Length: 98
Image 1 (tube, rainbow, N blue to C red):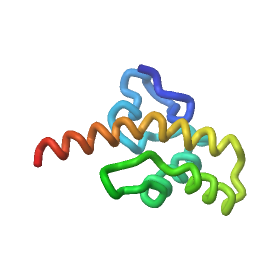
Image 2: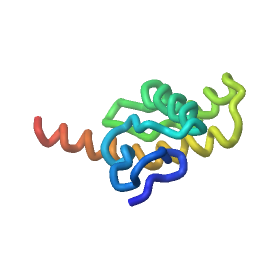
Image 3: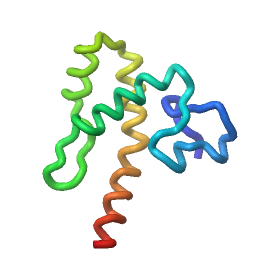
Image 4: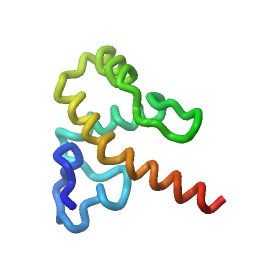
């Protein structure tokens, strides 16, 4: 499985950190969108009954406050698309252990 463009890094594809962790060493053009995603991961989700996807209004609000571009939006959504399923799997494994 190849890393999506939003998680591309300079290294061997077989050891790409997007397969192993949530904080890969990113290419410079992806660092800021990933940092924004990390903020949204903390503050842009509804956490009432498990973990939900990041709310679009949270993304749009943050980007508007920071004066970010459509490219940042696309990268944040790409990151969420790749990492959200992993978050669900991690949560499910943790729930099975308890």
